[in-house]
Image (cartoon, rainbow, N blue to C red; front, side, top):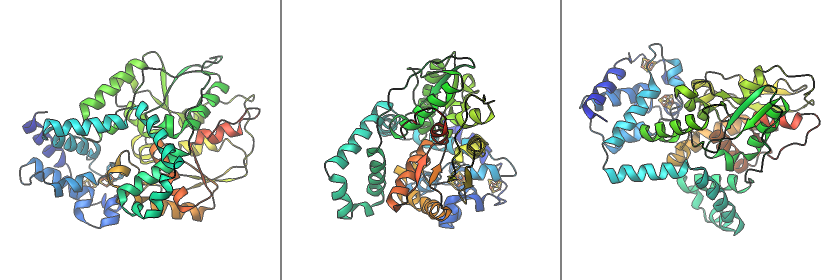
Amino acid sequence: MNAIASARDLATVADRCVRCGLCLPHCPTYRLARQEAESPRGRIALIQAWAEGELNDTPALRQHLDTCLECLACERACPTLVPFASLMDDARAAHWQSRPTWRRGLHQAWLSLLASPGAAALTGAAAQLYRGIGLARLVAGSGLTRWPAIGALHRLSQQLAGLPRIPPVAVGGEASRGRIGLFLGCIARTAQPGAIEASVQVLRRLGYEVVIPRGQTCCGGLHRHNGLPQAADHRLQTNAMAFADLTAVGLASACVAELRTQPPLAATQEICRLLADLDWPATVPLKPLPRRIAIHVPCSQRNRLRDPDAARDLLRRIPAIELTDLPENDLCCGAAGTYLLQQPRLSHALLQPKLTHLAASGAQILVTTNTGCALHLAAGVREAGLAVEVLHPVQVIARQLAGSESPST
Ligand code: SF4
Ligand code: SF4
């Protein structure tokens, strides 16, 4: 990256902020900290001062940029349309470009490990072992989970431990409606195998041939939002080749948003919107479900895809269902990709109001359209001892398909 040109670019974009402050009430980190530097306006001012050479790239400055969730609630609220997402991505890229090669290499290595489907499966197996040999009980009893990073890993391990590996899914079908390529993402194979199986089942019942292209990889979001745009672009190009002759359909809103940034993948569909808008044949009825379902709307679904009603529009096809939006759905739950590992204290603090609202809602099921949010919320539900299932909306639909066996959850 050309440091001088990029610094100029950063300063020019940051200059579009007129300091009106309309974004501040929408920013989750500002609401927690009540500090200007933890607000969108403050972060833009810090980036501008750094780009113009008035501030050095110190750990204190980095901390204020790193605590940004990239939830983009600020971008939605901004009257002058400051492109906050690309500004923050570019600032992070400029920072990492200026770090020593070995340090950047380490950063890239751990992100690539996280984004690797093989590593996700290994993590699931390790989590099962952690529980199986009693280490989880020991750690919980020792009080070590009071440390935010250990607490976050412990909660996630509890969640992954109980989950099965992706069951073998039958692909193919009569294809009266055409052929669809299912995008799995990196962590969903281990974290949400039931959602993948449910998606295949529902799409096939509706007349699609479903293909799971072998060449697909992580969407690149983890790399892009952690300052490694070239590694992100490489993953997008790999996916563009894997889905070259297919309509790509994704289960996770954050992945769909990321895929759509690559022109050949611009038509990638989010599965809830696809199924909600489809003309359902009378031969595929849904059984009534007289239960209350709470809807969590991920930031990527609301602020990147700009389609906050997709899950609701799909689920209201089910007779007798009672749908309720989780209050404060416009505030991030704290998952935010790698944020739950990198900023465990803030991530945990942002999760708590969600759990309070969920407990008060009386819902027996919580649905969300993003894998990271599902993992984070399910870990919180488990820790809080709530009797609530956390599911992808398509899993609820699959359970209500008349005449079919429900896929695992
Ligand atoms: S992206 Fe979210 S956390 Fe970051 S400044 Fe904007 S509102 Fe705040
Ligand atoms: S709303 Fe937009 S212009 Fe106003 S302070 Fe926030 S980023 Fe700047």
